[in-house]
Amino acid sequence: MSLQPRKSVVLPSHRVPAHLARRFNQIFLGVMAEYLAPEDLTPLLWSVMAAVQEAPGCGQKQGALHVGVDAVNFGQMIDVLEAKGLVARKIDAGDRRARKLYITERGTALRERLSPILRIAQERLLAPLSKAERVALVDMLVRVIEANDSYARPGNGRRKPKRTPKPEARIGGRDERSLEGA
Image 1 (cartoon, rainbow, N blue to C red):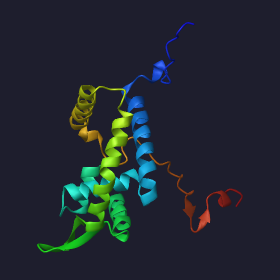
Image 2: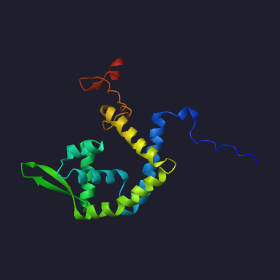
Image 3: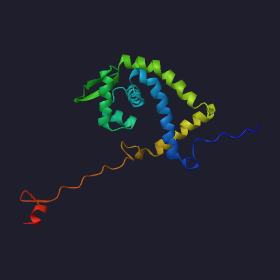
Image 4: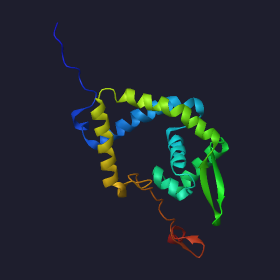
């Protein structure tokens, strides 16, 4: 009986950071989603909760920067979390037009309950690496992200929307084409 090495599911042409980062993200989001779905949360909503918890009193713009999404989408996610009673907006005493964000007791309890479970799931996914390799991987990812943060703009890398052609020029309320036979 000969033992053949296990064939890699990663094609040689895909052994590049861009593809591997996408697959890595896909795997981690999938696992997180399994644990968050019963709470009717997505990994991104969980990330927004973490940002609010780690920076209590921040505004939407600051929170959006922490998470790496645009302020409008961040605000919509805050709406969802607020409706669930997990995050609260409070009027800023220094600027009554502004709102400060805080995690609620319910949100804190949920994060305290699920964080250890999600940490274990992430450790399970990183099980092929030694403890030192796991720490090194996270350190290297942070270093690459911090060195290239200018590319971490919301929507960066998306295709530009296709513009519909302008309607044909109109003369005196009539189409130019209708003048051809006149």
